[in-house]
Image (cartoon, rainbow, N blue to C red):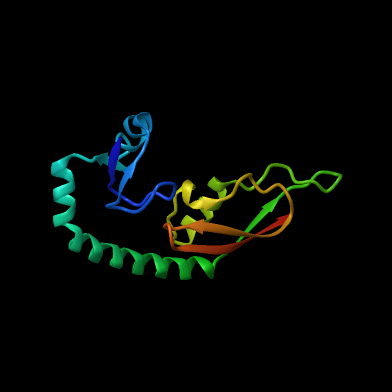
Length: 147
């Protein structure tokens, strides 16, 4: 099934691209979540006529994301967790903890944008990557200390 992407989606492509995907993926995920629309003849014609406007919008969006990336790269988050007798951490630092801490410094991110396979369960300093778009990535530091 052919779909037109309504917005950038890291796993698939950029806004305005026409992609061939499996029918179930389109019907059950992409279209209901507003990520894509069915690529009909009329939709493809409308896409071609609005291409110039979409490029200008994308340039502005990229500029804003570059500024956000530079702001994010200057951030260092600190967390304090308790430890047991063996020196192991009780609990962990998960994406939700990181999002709350970033919100406190006026940076709004989604869980999907933060690259963290598993929650952090050790004390120390870590570098976390953020995918702002397909091309734009940023990294920031997280320090976890024992209380």
